[in-house]
Every structure is written in structure tokens, then in C-alpha cells.
Image (tube, rainbow, N blue to C red):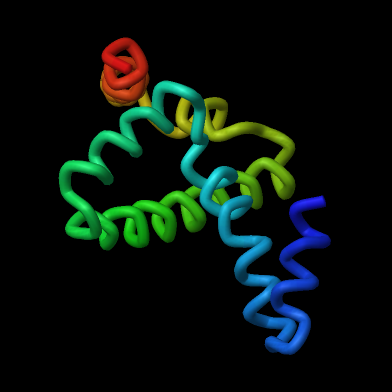
Length: 116
């Protein structure tokens, strides 16, 4: 229904602009992993800082797109995921440090959800 209304409203506009309107939110959700806690944090920071932090979304989305594409290509070509490659390539100490950094990142992502 929403798409039909948009098509009626933008009947005389170019198709590219309409596609950007329809694809934009889906792209952000797929890159940003928007869940309820993250969404609430985004709303609060947007209300407080307006558009001042918008450049961070662009940089982070581009970085996430590149990293996810590389990891997906690595998995498709070799049949192993990134952690298996790290385990095979590095010794125990670097692997442990990578694990600690990954756990810190998980905790850092969970903190805003707990606050929201």
C-alpha cells in the first residue's frame, strides 16, 4: 500500500529518484543492523545533535559495506569463515587479542540497547 501511494505521488518524477526513496531505508537497515535498542539510540542522538553526526553514518556504512563484502567473498571462495582463517594464520596470542577485541565490540554494542 505504501509503495502504491509513493508511486501515485511521484508519477511524474524520474524512476531513479523513486528507487532511491524506496531502497534507501532498506540499505540503511541492512548495513546498520537496526534493532529496537539501536533505533531508540539513533532517535535520541538525532533529536539532540540534528544533522551534525550524519557524516559518521556515511563513513561507517561504507566501511561496513567493504568489510562485509570482503568477508563474504572470503567465505564463498574458501568455504571457511573469517574466524577460521584467523585461527589458521595467527598464533595463540594474536588470536586471543582478536577475541578480546571482538568481545569488547559486542559489549559496546549491547550497552546502548540496555540504556534504551
